[in-house]
Length: 121
Image (cartoon, rainbow, N blue to C red):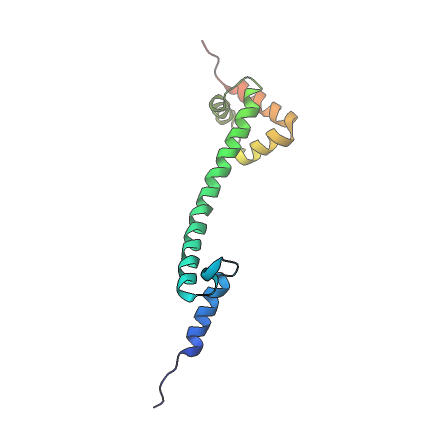
């Protein structure tokens, strides 16, 4: 029985790692041990930052809505409460876009939200 040689498998694995490390600085791009660590860490950063990106965009949308709503004489929390009471089912992404690009439409939404708020006694 002939022995099994694994040169092609190892080379393919190494090639895959080194291809992923393309563009890295120093030995991170051409030394398999260091490249493997660098690619692993890059994957961890990518996984984490896909989650962080969602948080960052939500925060940006809230800031934009808040700025536009304060110009209309409401706070963000009052506006969102009014939106819920009025039954407006637009998400923050869409409302932020309307606030930035379609001022008249957003003003109409703010008016609806104001009307839905209970009057302060």
